[in-house]
Image 1 (spheres, helix red, strand yellow):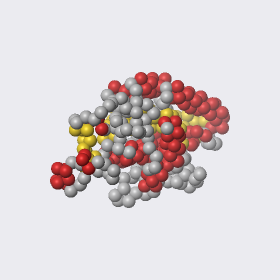
Image 2 (cartoon, helix red, strand yellow):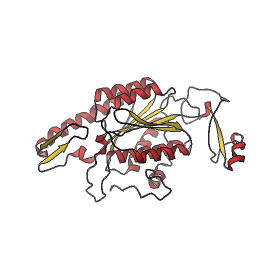
Image 3 (tube, one colour):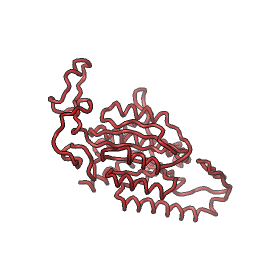
Image 4 (cartoon, rainbow, N blue to C red):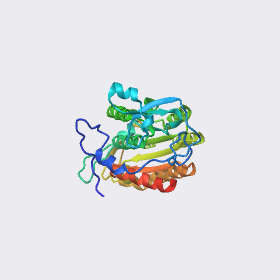
Length: 313
């Protein structure tokens, strides 16, 4: 399948919310495989029972909502319909964690004339699209951007305004050295008081042992964890020829070599790396998705969501 570049947004369309991608994933959903602290009956398992009268927040009315939950005072002021959400009626919280370290800035040329897309750009489209889907299904989503530490954080909300906020934040994210995935995962294991989702978008070019400890910390706290392992096809196939200088993107120096002389060793190390991460995720019941940036974004998302629905249902 040829890779399609995301369409150019119009003046009112956030860059990373590609309508074609959103249309493809709209019929799908992200359901919790394990207990989350929300109570939408029939979709997510929840430890809560009954309904609370403690007001939490508003969200826009959608067809099918009960009219008794419409906040008529807000309608009188704004002319728009909003529904009251109560603490026990808010569903799962999901945090999108975007790795913005320098290695994510890598992107090789496309053989099919489609330009190029860095790993960071691809991860932004994945995060924005999945965030939109989560709010559409009436759950809450937030965004954390990190490199060696958490740089920006948007608290999870279930209104479309948070999608606009996330899209605006993604516009200004640029790659920074260096990576410390593990520290951020441990931070979120402590930060999230309610069991929910943590979705990581990273190339995982970091200390693998520390990363695995981080995801195990999240799992110990009861969170559903999804890892989108974002890699460029040049990293996956190492197609270089001639004599090349390889520059480290995270202050790791440079090396001049003939790629064909080291390709076999490189591919062996890559396979060992991918296998170790994938098997560790499987053992910890963490969803692992190898996100090859040469694939259409909607193909990566729909393939994962369909596969997950089969295991949840």
